[in-house]
Each structure stands twice: as structure tokens, then as C-alpha cells.
Amino acid sequence: MTTPQPTREITGHTRVYGILADPIHHVKTPQMLNALMAREGRDGVMVPFQVAPDDLATLVAGLKTMKSLGGFVVTVPHKTAIVDLCDAVSDSARRIGAVNTVRREADGRLIGEMLDGKGFVGGLLAAGIDPKDKSVYLAGAGGAANAIAFAFVEAGISRLTIANRTRAKAEDLAVRLAEAYPKAQVDIGNPDPSGHDIVVNGTSLGLKDGDALPLDTARLSPEQIVAEVIMQPEETALLAAAKAKGCRIHFGKPMLACQLDLMAEFLGMRALPGAGK
Image (cartoon, rainbow, N blue to C red; front, side, top):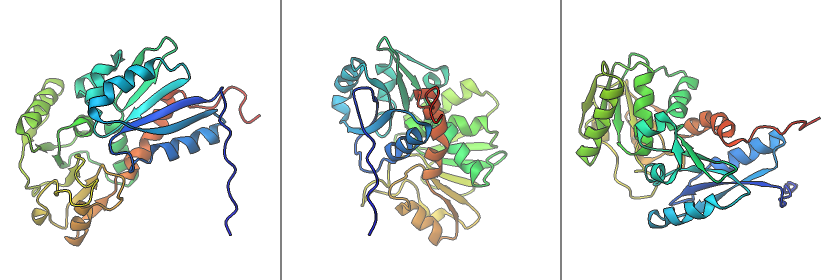
């Protein structure tokens, strides 16, 4: 019989953090950052907030007034909309057009940053996959996909193809990439991912049973690496199809794992002075 683990006491001194999503069932960030704060001796707790897009502005306005709030993480589908709800965002987040981590300052100001791209590329590198000089096919042009696209170009890929259901969004992302990196080769693609070294799903397709596939898996070939941003389910329909085709697959969880330190630093979750002594 498993011995129950003691529950950490939450008091009026506890710093509160949130994660905003809709749906919320798939998130892994609270478990991982709560464990990190426990290790660091930080009196803090992260809890999930399920909020629909139409209610996001109302919730954020309320969070600004919450003096015990240290900040929050933002995920699907709010990463783009949250930009205009922050009081300030980093230059890179403004350029990407999305935010996934928000810190609340003592005066109530909300400061946004985007860490998805750095986390995704870091996860690939940790798995021994160096995107430098590789051609990349990216499905999606939303918040996470924007960050990943910029991070890939910064990592020195040879070519990026962006494929999105709404072509105008892919074109907009390509224009912003060209403005930031004039020498980068960026193309607009279609559901066919063939001819690329790395294939990435940067959409939310795969979160729910019955979701359409984000690309034409019949066009995958064994020499390709197929990677996900989705963490739950761990093996999405795309990854299952890619594995059946003989591709190397890369799960979504390493992206989050590589972001944890960046998030903890940005949100002030590091050890308190004298903790552990």
C-alpha cells in the first residue's frame, strides 16, 4: 500500500501562480512547477484556471488586483490574445505576437514574455536533434508556432516552410520573419510535409479525440523527424502515424521541461534567501 505524501500547507503568505487554458485537462505545468518550488523552498503554489476566450479579459483584469499573485502561464488558446492584456511585453514577444508567461509586479502591472520557441528548440537539442542547417516544415501559425518559427530561424535552419489552414496568418508570420531576418528562406506551404528534415505540429490539433491531422501523414518518409508541441496525450494521432511510417518522433513534453527554468526565473520561483539552511 502506497504511503500518502504529506500535503504542503498553503497559508496567507503563500505566493499564488496560475495557468490559463481552455481546455485545461492536458496541462502539466502546475505539477512540474509546484515540484520545482518545493525543491527550491519557495512558499508558492500554481493552480489551473480554465477560462474561455470570451472571458479572458475579465479574468485578467481581476488577476491584476490580486496582491498575492506572482504571475501566470498562458497556453492554448490564449497566447495571442494575452499580448494586448499585458501592460508591457518583451521585444521578442511583441515581434512574435504571443505571450506564454506573465509576471505580476508589486504595482499590479502585468509583464509578458514568450518562452515557447526557446523551450521547443532546447527540447530538440536535449534529445540530440540539432536543427542547424536543417529544413523545417511547421504546421500552424498561431502563438506557439510563431515562437517556434522565430526560434528555428535564430537556430540557423536552412529553410522554413509554414503551412496553416488560414493562409493569411502564415503569410503574416513569413513577413515578420523576413523583417527580423532578411536572409532567412521562408516559404508558404500546404498539407504536404515531404522534402523536409524536421516536421513540426505547432497547432492544437491532436488535443482532442477525433481532431483532424495537422498535415498529410501519407507524405511522411522514414528519414524525417516528426515533433509535437502537444503534451497530453503524449502520443498524438500525428506521432502514431509518423511512427508507423518509420519516422523518428519527438514528444511535446521536452519543450515544457526546457522552459521550466526560464519560467521559474521569470516568475520569481527561485529559492528564498536562506532556504534549506
